[in-house]
Image (cartoon, rainbow, N blue to C red; front, side, top):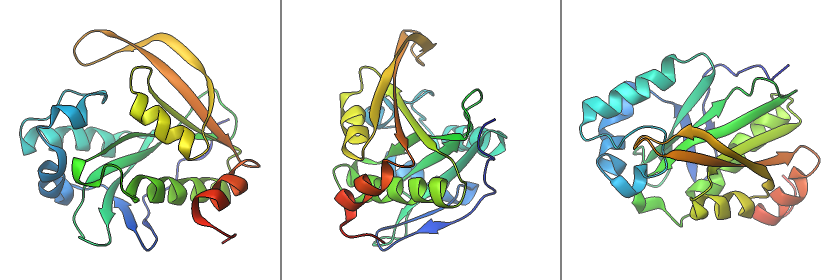
Length: 195
């Protein structure tokens, strides 16, 4: 049995607000990363070239029963700069995945990704009661793998030819996880003393 998917909700801290993704976020999201091939390089959809294309991708996420997507809104600007998603994990007991994440370049190498992951992982363990958070990325996406390791993700292995990329080539997918009893030490390392 997988974790029960949460209803749309808002999570926030001093750095970022994660709010349910809606069509109202599309103009800001398109400005942040629409049409940018480097931002979309590792995503499971082709680079959106128009707001309408981005809106269609977002609508599919919002409507899918196994996804809970959030717009990522830095508190400093109040404008959406990307999205991140809880994803159901059929076949894994009491687990949830964090994925389908992208950010515009203006927040790369900033505190935004770490803040998002802390909010999502805290909520997964503290409120959803999962025992395992799963993260995955294209085996060629070294930057993403480094970011996952930095927050405490432990490599679990690589599924070869797990799915096709938008360009038709095969993607090998690197899997990582963080367990509930591992998270407190990682959280303290990332944020300082206990919450």
